[in-house]
Length: 271
Image (cartoon, rainbow, N blue to C red):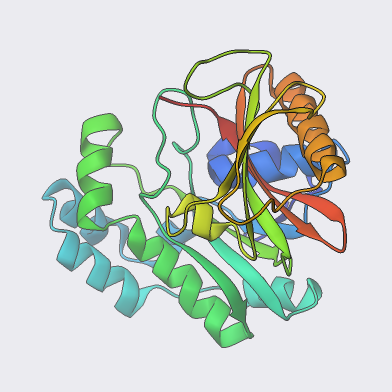
């Protein structure tokens, strides 16, 4: 583990304290030889090395989100080692994702509190988006939520940089039915293109209720049936593997490219 970069294959990246919820989950899946696009995390303590910590904590304590965001945007410096790691990843399109240390736990889901940027390309844009992710940790909404659920002293905020999958189809799968809680049923939601449409609620996805083998029991397909039987079976197989690996039901983001299913994120199902 270096001071500024932890690759998914590094055991240190499985630490939520260092890589945040998203980063640790992706590293854990990578080290289980599951199909995860390659990437790395900028550790959670790097932000504190790049700004005036005392000033930033004061702004957070005072819930002055405008001053906190301005301080990060105007003064934070992304270490060159991080941009070198992006080049080592092969450059090109990446996802730059916020990964808070308190995120993706059963106690509190911070999903949507910080930013994710897709299809980021070039070292300069990667640098800007990392700073934007750090700044989003101090938005009005994020500070309020952290004040209620966590601690305003907390400045630990990792950022994940991951190769983009040029998704032909994408979506989410819940390894237990998220509404009925039936353990013998899974819910899969799918769209053509990027899965962010599903996560953000931008479009109504095709929805499939399947058994543990991925056999369709019920469906609503406004897009005419995005997924084939083979794809339903493969997504379900991976969902069962992840539920077994983590020991609890999972909310999983996935994407399909050239008939291969890739895992983009997995978190415990929360209310």
